[in-house]
View: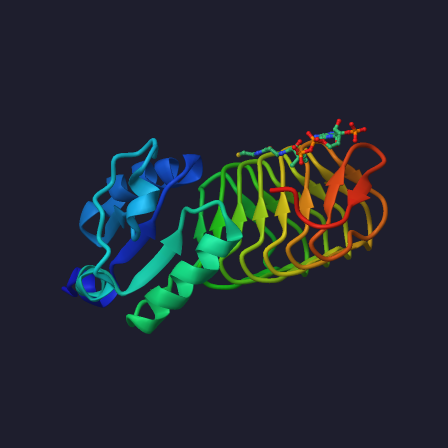
Length: 214
Ligand SMILES: CC(C)(COP(=O)(O)OP(=O)(O)OC[C@H]1O[C@@H](n2cnc3c(N)ncnc32)[C@H](O)[C@@H]1OP(=O)(O)O)[C@@H](O)C(=O)NCCC(=O)NCCS
C-alpha cells in the first residue's frame, strides 16, 4: 500500500466548498486527504480550524497532490507557485457525486466541482478552477486557470473565461461572450456583451466599471 506522501491530497483552505470537500473526502479516506492553511493570514477569521503548515517541504511529505479551497485568485496563483516549487502537483479534478460532466468535456488538474454542477458537451475547463454548487456550463465553453464561479452561475455555449475571472452567485453569461483576465462579475449580473479585462460587471443588462473594485 502506498504512503500519503506518494498519493495523498492536501487541501489548502478554506471556504464553504472546502468544508464540504473535507467532510466528503476525509470520510472516504482521512489518511489520504489532509487539509491545512499554508500561510498564517488564512488562519485569521477562518471558519474552519485547520492546522497551519507553512513549511511546504513538510507538507510534501504528507501529500503529493494539492487542491485549493481559496477564493482570491491572487492567493491561488501565489500558493500554486509555492506548492509546485515544493514538489506538489495539482490533484486530478475532484467532483461532487451529484455533478454531471459530459463525457466530451475535459477538466484540467486541480479543479473542484460542487454539488449539482453541470458541465456540457465539449467544454474545456482549465486548471485550478472552482465551480461552486449548481453552476451550469452550456456546451463548448472554455476557461483559463484559477477561474472561480459562485453558486448558481449560468454560462451559455461558446463562452470564453480567461484566467482569474471571478463570477458571483446567480450571474448569467449569454452565448459566445469573452470575459477578460481578472474580470469580476457581480451577483445576479446578466452579461450580454464581452467583459473587458480587469473590469467589474454589475446589473441587468450588465454595465462595466474599469478596473477591479475588489
Ligand atoms: C460589485 C461590487 C464589488 C461593487 O462594490 P463597490 O465597488 O463597493 O461599488 P458600489 O457598491 O459603490 O456599487 C457601484 C455601483 O454598482 C451598483 N451595484 C453594485 N453591486 C451590484 C449588483 N450586484 N447588481 C447591480 N448593481 C450593483 C451599485 O448600486 C452602484 O451603482 P451606482 O453607481 O448607480 O450608484 C459589490 O457590490 C459586490 O457585488 N461584491 C460581491 C460580493 C459577493 O458576492 N461576494 C461573494 C462572497 S462568497
